[in-house]
Image 1 (cartoon, helix red, strand yellow):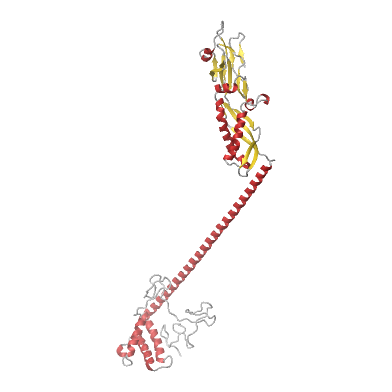
Image 2: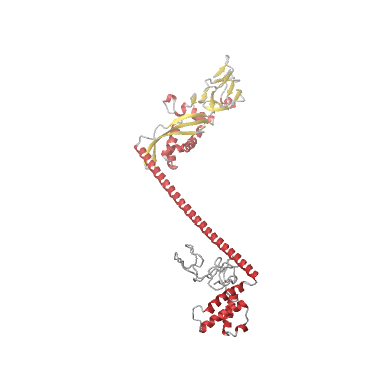
Length: 477
């Protein structure tokens, strides 16, 4: 390890041994001034005198002279007759991180599981890394007077016969903290592998609190395995309880998920049904509206056509209506209708008839006086009603507008409803029919009398009077 010249004056001091050594003492203790000291990058060299750590050298090559070893120079007296020789001990300290040092509990750790109330015993093992951070403190408190210190001396003594220097410290920290950490953090022993990093970090912190006093640090501490007592009846009961609990929790989660899915399905079905009903109602309302608008448009077109026809013939709608009513009244009044034909009833009927005829023929009151004075007032009132001089308001069945006096609704254009006399279908028995055909079976409305006829001029059907109400054509015999 060192080289001494034959004269014994110049020597080379260095260490190039294995890397698993923490500290190594140079076998030569007598050196001469001018000796060469070589310290590698990962080392430190310390000179001892009388058990005291004196001069410290970092990495580099040094020629030992009085100016670079002042503490050694002051600590000894040169021998008589040979001032170049001095006596000292030289230790080389390895500053690299020693990795993969194995450890394991030498006995079981008793653990109480609060969840099950059972006591079980567990073991643990792993590895750690170790490094010297203070050479003086390390040599004084750990190495002492031994010639070297390697990894094997950390947890076991020479040949494993004696206890290692840090075995008691590490075992005490592992046993004292393992059960406590598991309890404090409520770690399930059956899921312990998921928490090995947490346990390892806690152990490292606890052990480093003491290692600092020895000039060392443990950068990493690893728990790789937790030995569980698989043959212990209590441990088997604990696993069975945990399995049953897990199964019940899972079953409850499945039932809850199924209930939530069923509830969501019902909500979706209800929303879908409501939307379908809303769409159906909107469709029906739209259909009714379209139908009403179509009917109103058809009625309006028919009215315009009739108005154009009447305008072409030279009379107004009021005159046409008065003419039709007058013809009907004249037919019923003159013929007596019910067959009585006498008294005030005949006079009233005749008055109505003549009054209507007066509206049609533009007769004067003087022309009607020779026949009946009283009939004038009655006829005049009938004429006013027919001419539309009386305020006859109505309510729109489509949009609900009230007080309408015109023939069409000013809001939606719907025509004024015609007050038809309802009838009963002779085929299916449907009642209160106001249309020309039965809405249930399609049977046409029966003639009012057997004497109904069809106008050969304009085609109007079911005429019961002697003259056509549309064109005035006389009934053919």
